[in-house]
Image 1: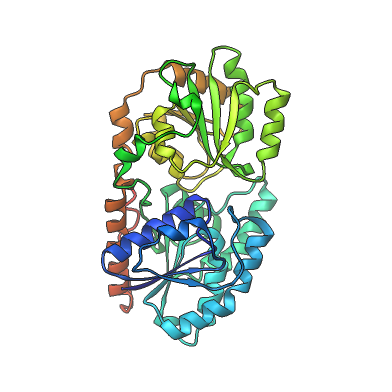
Image 2: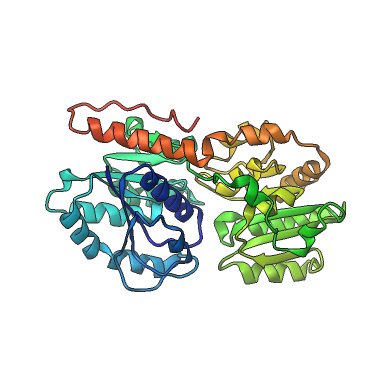
Length: 396
């Protein structure tokens, strides 16, 4: 298969990491893989398999975390180059690898001289219908529907994301397939033993319990809620908080930590290159997100047997932790409930084997095999008048 993957850039983020894993995994299986980016120079480019053709569509250097107007500008500017690439190379399939890449992939595909010669697959990496208000949800649907409906097929990263596409945008269920994301690396045990990158984690066995949050410091991820909940928790028992990551809310989080007098108990060490080492030494991982697709860091925490508390937000959270059967699950945006669950999580002895079993489908080898099998099945049957695909089977 000749597979073209399109994303803004290989910057920090879950969709970017999954793009890297899928590209490398498919190339390792012998497929011809082109990775197309709107901005170049991101650090993760160095991890690309040498067999992958890396195609920068724009000359501008990427930011560490691609968001906002800068990303929109990069993506819009890439349309002419993407059209030229599609007309010249005519891959078997073009996959828009993240929600932000969807409009550009659709527009460029529609401008091809022979669009039917290349299949258009869109990957829903996040919950599509999310918006904090009913009016916002309506406007979001009005804006997004024309793009998503142009897809030949859609890959959703969770059943919740698939349901959002159906209920929010009216996409027919038979056009959506749930596939497990390749999140967990083959060398996970070795990486879990690496240096954790913070002094508190070096004495994790002897010091107060350590609570960890990890991700981009943006509104979606809810770290503001975690800081407020931690303030309640540490009044009742000694503990410490480490927030690994970076993003536009960093300064606001640091200011709130100072306002609450938590400067000696909470720290923001920055982005970590060894999340498994961090999580394997933590006493509790907290995911306070307001919405998700399939949060990789939740999978990573469970894979190393770290106890978890998570918000029951739109996305794949409840699916992974079996509706709260193997971890704490609380309402979204509920600080008191989050604090209570954190206290319970610190007191409860986890079944670490059950946590690890829950994420077996997200190991790289089975997840890449699922993607390859689905692509082969779809492309082989694409010319038939009626195409019937198994949907949702690989994500269970």
